[in-house]
Length: 224
Image 1: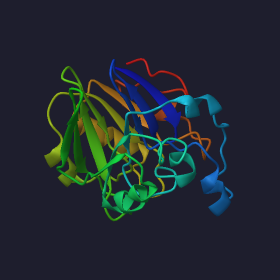
Image 2 (image 1 turned 90 degrees about the horizontal axis):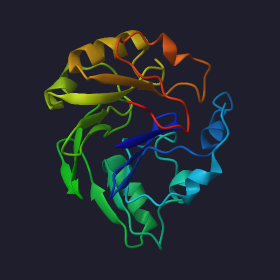
Image 3 (image 1 turned 45 degrees about the horizontal axis):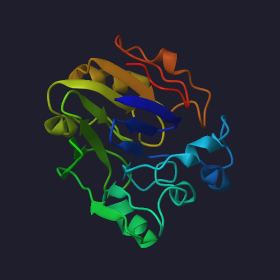
Image 4 (image 1 turned 135 degrees about the vertical axis):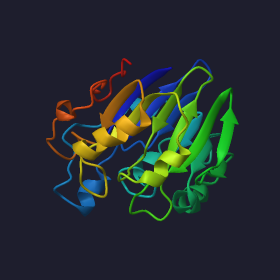
């Protein structure tokens, strides 16, 4: 599995058969609402050449479900599998086309080309946030989505997680680095990847103290 960090919480997973994009934020939409949240890193325009087979959204906040970004990948002429919790599903399906809009709330599963996706609990300020487990048959990858530390989440998480992708910025109802470390110690992944920093702030993700961590570089493959 090749994995690329798209900045903020955006990720691109690639198998031999699928390109899976999660929560891409590739615009300046947030700055228009809150000027302090301007992009520190310009958009890589070459990313718009990607034709994802699967798009996953974890919740309906602008830095995760950004219509300005989404319409570059989903529209009347595309055929994309879209997995989205209720808050996003109600909006994204208005884009129409031959896309398959699946209401992907907690405990829902979908299997595509041998990859199984499972929606799991997240604790956030959106009405229906999710995390997602991506199981390619060899390894399990866990993208938490935006979330606080909540004991109920662990009921949904299987053993044997290979890598977890976890927010560590500590604002906007996300875990700080201390609680994200505790969270990872409970999940027990082989590798933890801190995200959700460095685009709207100057935080250094190298300060995340989980022992088995890989700090990503924006627009680069994450070497796990």
